[in-house]
Image (cartoon, rainbow, N blue to C red; front, side):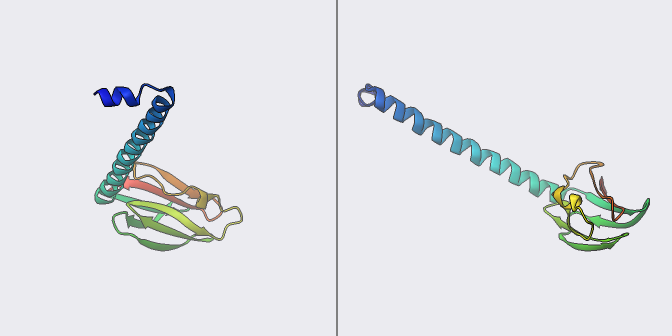
Length: 128
């Protein structure tokens, strides 16, 4: 313990020690958060969620979110959906504003939705 006290006796060494300890702590917290998020994504893909694709009020397709893939939908305008990690997203639309593409991945939670208004396509996440 005397060596540690000797090292920490100068102000510069204490500041360096605090900085190193903070970096180590931030690294550990980042790794833990990454692991939690990764396990959440794995659990999400193993749980039973589906995406209902609705065009003008009618369900035209049901997609199992545990099956990754690309799906082409012919709405008023064509759109493309991608399923990855138990979640779904618009990846391409012929509409003029492309707002639906900016939604990103729709979380796998009950009644989460994304909409492409010009194509009149709604994607709604539901339990199986």
